[in-house]
Image 1 (cartoon, rainbow, N blue to C red):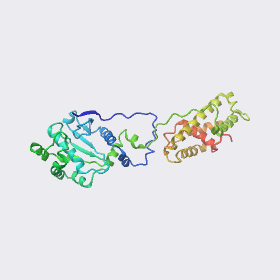
Image 2 (image 1 turned 60 degrees about the horizontal axis):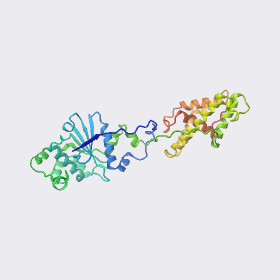
Image 3 (image 1 turned 30 degrees about the horizontal axis):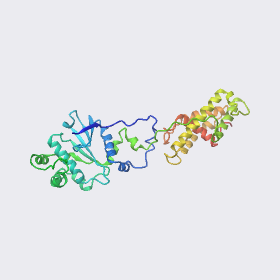
Image 4 (image 1 turned 120 degrees about the horizontal axis):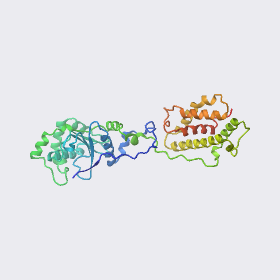
Length: 360
């Protein structure tokens, strides 16, 4: 008895998953990556692909348990399921290309169980393997009459004892006639590269192959006291605040006298920590220099605004951080990962490094 489960289980959805995944694509060719799958993962991969072919199939099922009768993934074209029009996908994950002896038992199962009426013969039976097929099998699959002859010739040795463990299936009588009249053109083996290209249209492809950033942890909030590594940009802000307030200088202990300025300092420190969080987060997940190139792009994008004449230093920092939030960084791999707070924070990182100053 064949048991079935829903072809696809929804993958866990995480709204914080970086949308820059596609741009950051992996350095490993997906064709090589699929070689690392085990048999179950390979079947799941094929399952995802077939499930996406909604223009072809009304439903997709995936047999589970023993006695699958030669079916790994089935795509139904109508409500009659196995008694209607359907396609069979056989998933074969081997460390080598498929040869005839690898698929012969599966062909035997399709022939036998369709002869017995367990299901109608599929319209197509695809053998899906990451390393494809041998040249010899390629030629056989491209010539239905020769494939039929090979199956009949090798039945006793390669197939008769491997269709079911309950009996030896002899190629005799009505069954022999059925095999001789069977359309062997249904059997084929699509190239793995073609399968990957079609899988790219599914919702699962980027998660498998996109190589994008994983979910980003929540950024730390700045501590109550300004830390040593913050001193430069905080001092630059205090100079800008004093310039705006008409004071010779303003210390951290005095900033609370000016609520709007104190609130701006709090937001600026939060933004700095956001940017620092992004810097650390991508450090081991992108190529060296990726975050620094983001800083360079933001610096280039705000330079004109920074160099313009402004009423005071505070006006300059507000104008520069506002500009940073609106920059088009479409070509940068961290474009979508860098949130508004990150972009403002990068400006304060640049000030921390002495590349931006607020009071002229």
